[in-house]
Length: 139
Image (cartoon, rainbow, N blue to C red):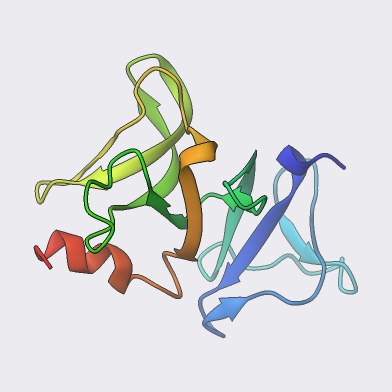
């Protein structure tokens, strides 16, 4: 399996990533490998696909990751963080870094997609939402 085929699953009920092996069927339904007879609930289990890209430290980047963005950071004491998402940008659907401007989010990498060599994964939207909230609040 290539990196682009990997995914992880966030469980809203347990408030953590699934630690058991999760598999997807041809229709995208998710199952614990040991219990293939009962699919995981879509409303409580969030699939996050791997981009197939690695950050500057060699760590795989997933949908929902929060990355320190060196291209947008001017002052190291005030780093800029971006959420990774599959989004519609000017050049079509692609993996993008998303930035909040107070009125919503928009992709920042319009033509080239994610420039992984300038990103460092520092968390994710479930376990570290404060990284994005600080910037949205102007902090």
